[in-house]
Length: 564
Image 1 (cartoon, helix red, strand yellow):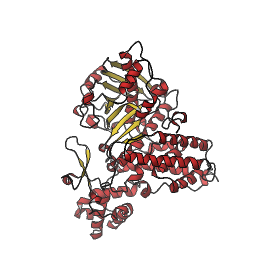
Image 2 (spheres, rainbow, N blue to C red):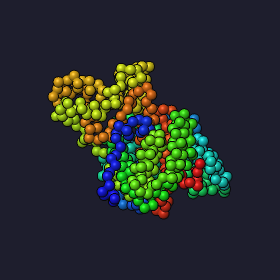
Image 3 (cartoon, rainbow, N blue to C red):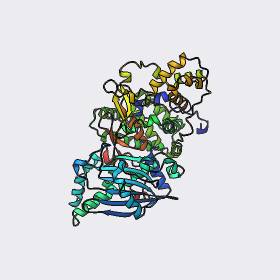
Image 4 (cartoon, helix red, strand yellow):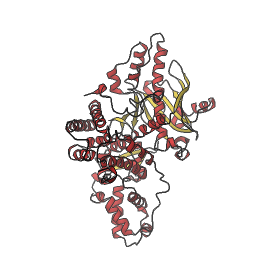
């Protein structure tokens, strides 16, 4: 039976996919935005240069890294700082950093750099123009920076085990785009092919930031001991990524952008469905998958975290990867719809971590089948959110029961069901999560619990005799936002998280991980239930390597590096 006549496997049901526990088990994949970016940079033969690197002996100065594509050039402008250790903080309230950055639209002049030198180091206290596409900052790793500088200055390489343990020399504490601080709105660049996929500006900024950080540490070592200093070994150099500290500020994003969320999940689920639907393994893919599975197993065993929540998840992932290895030793992956048979086995055998790791692994050898879906992951949300007032009230009621049936069974008067409150801090205008029954914050609550709001609207819909949604909302305008969300979710099946986002046991890090997995982050390391450290671009090629090397086989360790 050929592929065109074989029954197609449908994408997974949103009720299965869109729970917090499963979203919090997602892993990076071929559709993650870092990988989408590097594939494009490689295929379009982008070139890179460093037109300026003026850093003094103390590590203070400015550097510019430019990327040149078919039609546009972009430049990372980096301002390096000699920050005293006592001022180094990952918190959003920090006012100074080891380095600050902006991604400039084009190649900056000296006047541009002078203007930006008075604003970028100030971050939120500064202002930029529409020529700037992103603003970011980073701090050195206290555990590793000095060790690497001292080792290189002394003429030898830093300890490999320590490099592997930390994995980065700097970590970003924010990468702002889309109009933040006066930077260009997304609409200004959305028509450029290189920015068609989401967050490509931010991913390009971090990619160039990694190159700057590695150049900076080698520069500092050379300035400290010109006679003895050596550069990093190229293989060891690639083991450094860019760390990132992400907190609650990112968590509500997925709730506030339902159509964008749908498009991300829908692309991933369509990719998985395409692979599962194959009647037989395409040439070479069975063996390639087995290799990827072994590498994922090695990655699971090398992945470390000190947080109990993550340690439990890692233990489960390692068990799952061990069971997958045992299963693959005897599995037939060549015919009889092999990927669907493997998936069905996983759904009844593996935990959520293992299932979602497998979902990513199944895409790896099938780039030609799934990579094009990255072009479907953006969203124009402005024109798709008008309320359909002519919809019959009965139709809206049926949609609520279908989409939010899980929420209708919850007792929303119970303390545990409504224990949390999402609000916005006055000082930083950042999302925060408080305790409803312990703090005086309920008057400031943000509408970030669609399930509860849908249940409230459902009760009023049942009691109403209005014929249409418009008539209903005239009497109950407090339900406008959830009526709109319900109509959106009816058209975009993965738009809504099917879980209680204000429950006492809700873990905000599940929201963070879901979003960061689409960025392409690896080695999630929660520091509480509200913020997490990750690594970006670890083992990825550097800009100068893209022309001659592979652009997309770096997210999992090579077997000889970290085999368990």
